[in-house]
Length: 254
Image 1 (spheres, one colour):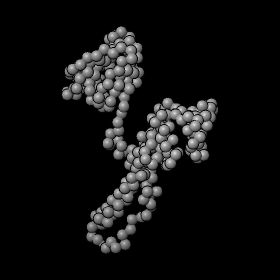
Image 2 (cartoon, one colour):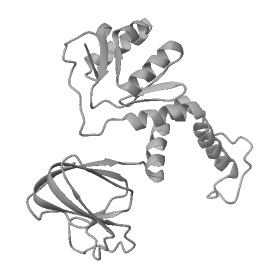
Image 3 (tube, one colour):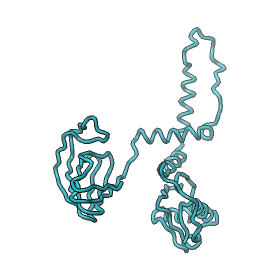
Image 4 (spheres, helix red, strand yellow):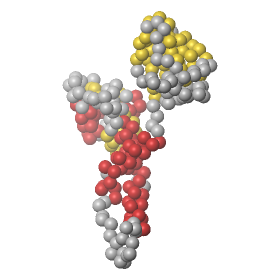
């Protein structure tokens, strides 16, 4: 986020639940920070402003200076003259958020993971309690859920796809047509690319990768570019993937 303020301007004392780097781009901004214990907020405001901010330290940032704030540290920035500050946040997934996202993806793949066999109870005797849920049905449901979740490789695939999924406000146009992948490639700045021991992930899609292709794709994810000589060492299938990604605007040729 880019924050512009005139002299004396600022949001007010607040805190974030993630790591924040405050990079001063223009002018000066005075920051007061502290490990706030009282998190009571001012009522009736559209933003979460601390009611009783107790700063412990103070810094004035000049252009090029950066201030790091751990999660939960309260901070209040006030412009010293006209200024502009870049706020760079590193969000981490919460456990409940990750469970919701991963379980939804598991549900989408349920038939492939556990099949579509129907529940059967041919041995169920006649009962005077027809509203009672049978223990066998509970066991059937438990077994289905455990089978769906007890697949580490598939869970790793879903996690990588989740972590590289572009945000809703990010979109890619068709490739610009310039350059060729054979001459080397660089990832578009909007592209997210990760990998694990078995997969490569890019913009919400996952691929199995082994051997030289895996090593080179990991190099692309880390360095965000590959030279012509590296591209030439890829298999034909991997180079075809690069071309598809170029056409989608995910990377650019040279």
